[in-house]
Length: 135
Image (cartoon, rainbow, N blue to C red):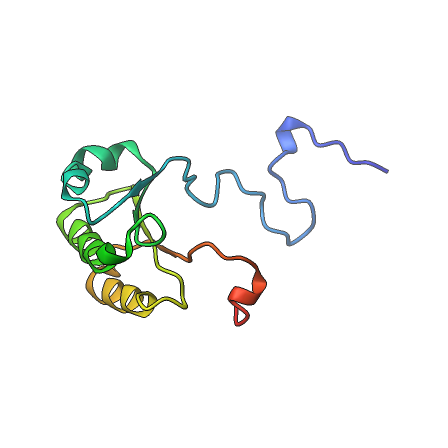
């Protein structure tokens, strides 16, 4: 037997004691993620104009950053987080691989210096479940 759900009763609970169905999305959609190389001042200087146009600003510390610029990128991310107001725009970072020499410093320095502004720490690309067996 099927139950017809008319528009008038669409938001009623389906069972006694069940919560009402959601009327709004439970999370904010992130449709536009703007990846920033935080070690390039020419780009980070434009952040005040970029922030209102994106749902997320992501400071990339991983594969797009050359090895000799990894620490500069981390410091640039911290500086851009400290020097800008993000409002409704999310602030994310994608850290270096957990088995790299930079990952632990990425986490410790970023969280201690700008963790209150940070919304997401994105783990880097993985090859398979064996890369993070503890998760």
